[in-house]
Image (cartoon, rainbow, N blue to C red):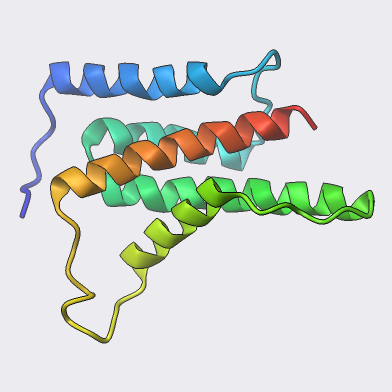
Amino acid sequence: MRTLSPPDPDLWRSRAAWFWRAHDINAGPRALDLGPRASLLLAELETAFCAGAWAAVVILAWALVEAEQRVAARALAERGEEPRPEPDVDWLRERRNALVHIADDPVDGEAPDEVELEAAAQGAVRVVFKTLFAGAWR
């Protein structure tokens, strides 16, 4: 179990650099044009990531992606189109659900280890930026 102590400043900086590299890798020719709620959640996502609050990153990431998915689904519906399956979004939903839904079976209810959580958080950030930048093209 971790204690409540701030991360080392160098670790915070390296995590922030990783976060913004993930942004830059997914960035398109258009900048993100986020509303106030999405901007707030993205700032919270960065803070949680830099702090190493991995489960919170996955949960916040899902909130951003789910909202963007709803916007995309409405736009597709207006054009008479169906959303296509997105495996990375499904992956994120599964990670989020595994964290927030308590299993009846104690073995299934065990928490993932720190390394597993960090990897999930990194994947979640990648999915967020991919999804948000896809939305910037609409």
